[in-house]
Image (cartoon, rainbow, N blue to C red):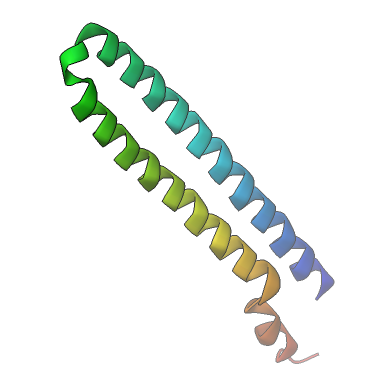
Length: 88
C-alpha cells in the first residue's frame, strides 16, 4: 500500500515538473519567434501580439490542468480504495 502512495507522489512530481518544463520551453520558443517576426514586419506587431497572448494562455492552461490532475491524485488518490479491497 505504501508503494502505491510513493509511486503516486512520484508521478505527481513528474507530471508537474515535465508540464512546467514543457510550458516554459514552449513559451520561450514562441516568444523568440514573435520577436523575430515583429522585427521583420513591425506593421503586423499588434496582430501577432494578440495571437501570441492567446497561445500563451492556452499553454499555461494546459500546464495548470496537468497540475490540478496531479494534485487531485496526490490528495484524493482513487487507487487506494481499489487496493484496500484486494484479498490478502
